[in-house]
Image (cartoon, rainbow, N blue to C red; front, top):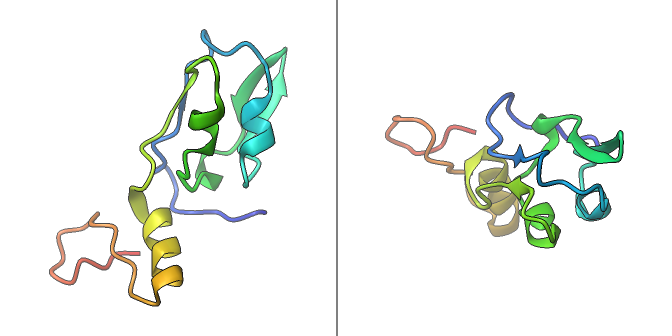
Length: 99
């Protein structure tokens, strides 16, 4: 998948000092956010991250952090699933819809 979300809003963080290069994050990431370089995982495009939390839940070394279920990507997906307008609470407009 080649989805791009809003630039520079993903909460994804990689603690490279804790990464052992097991590759689990690459296996479970639905948007190919990670690559292996020099036997360690690296984030190649943070803006592809939809903050689903699959990488964090599957990393046995706690090398990843993400606030899953927040942000515009989550709001858009939930809007599609529920048939409602996306609301990510990221703006101060009164409608709550900013995506």
